Length: 492
Image 1 (cartoon, rainbow, N blue to C red):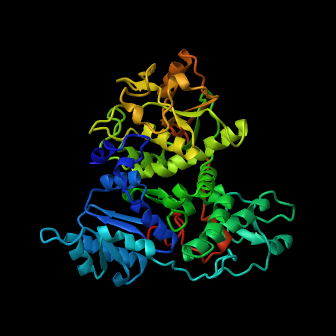
Image 2 (image 1 turned 180 degrees about the vertical axis):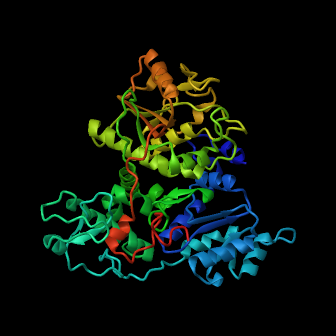
C-alpha cells in the first residue's frame, strides 16, 4: 500500500530515506536525456508504484504495474509500443536466485537483455544516441526551412489553422472555417513566432531526444511554449500515474540538477495553466476547474471517493509533480514582481491535512506545499493544525503541524520568522471553508496572508481549454504525433 512508503517519507523529505546512496534513481532520467526509452515494469499495484516512483523522483515514459499480464507480456508490449526489437531492450531486475528467478526468466522469455540491479552502474557508461551531430543548429533535421515567413493564426479563435503571410496579403479564406484572413496587422501574429519555435523544438526533441544540442532546444521550448499547446505537450495517463513533461522532452532528473532548466520549467508550466478569472467573493487564485479531466486527475491522485469519505488509501502521488511545478511558477512570478529576484522571508503555509493513517496516507496539501516550497527555494511553514472537522483549523503556537515534525525540510521556527511574504496553499477550493478558517486562524495571531492559491476550484469551467491540435497548426496537417486528443497517435 502507498502508506508503507509514505510513512517512511515525511512531507518535506520527498523520499530521502528511501533513496540510494549512489543516486541511481537519476539513471532513468539521464538515459532519457541521452536518447534512450525508459519504462518501469513491476508486479506492484499501480498506486504503490506511482507513489514510490514519485518519492524517488524517477523518470519514466511508461509504467506497466500490477494487472494480470506477466512481466514477459509487459516487456513484449513495451517493445511493440516503441517499435523496437526486444533484443534491444535491457531489463533491470533482481539477480537470479534459485528460489526467485522471475525477473531474469521474464527477460529471457521476452528476448531482452537482463541486467541485475546491483550492476545498474553500467548504464552510467552508456553512450549518447543521436542522429543530429550539430552543436548549433537547433532546428529538427526533418524540418524544412519555411519559405513563407511567419504564419498568421486564423482570425477565428476557435480554429487552430494558420496561413502564410503571403496568403494573408491576398485575402485568403481559411479552408477549415471559411473565415477571411485580414490584411490588417494582427496582434496574434506576434505570438505565432514563439509558437513555431516551441513546436519545432518539441518535434526536434521527440525525433532525436539525445541530440547534442538538447539543452539549447529545451530552453527554446520552455521559453516559447504558449498556453494553447497545453494538451499537445503534456503526457497524461492516469492509469500509469503520468502527468508530466515526457522525459524525452525534459526529465525530472534534469529539473532536479539544473537550476536554470528548473526555473524555465516552472515558468512554462505556469504559462500552460494560467489562473482562472477572478470570481466575486473568492480571494483565492486557482488554475483549473474541479471538473472533467481535472476532476478525474484529482480523484485518481487522492483516491477521492465520496465527499464524506475524503481521500482514500490508493493514492497516486506521481500525479502531483506537475501540479507543484505550475503552482511554483506562478508564485515565484508573484514574489519576484513584488520583491525582486532574490526575495527573503518568503514562506509557504499549507492548509493542513489530517494525520497520516493507513486509510488516509496522502497528506497531499502538506506534501504539495513542501514540494512547491522546494521548487521556489522558499521556507515551508506548517503552523496550522487540523482538527476532526473539515474546517476545524487552528494556529499552532508550538513547532508546526505536529510536535514530532521537526524533520520538515526547510522548517522555520515561528519565533524566528521575520518574513514579509506569506503564501497560503491548498490543493482544492470547494466552498472555501478550510481556506477561510486557515486565514482567520493566522489573522487571530497577527499573521497576514499575501497570497492564497489552490490548484483546482469547484463550480468553475475550463476557460483555457485548447480547441484543437495547435502543434499541427504550426507544423502542418501531416503532424499527428503529440499528446492531445486530436492527434491520430494519441495514446497509441
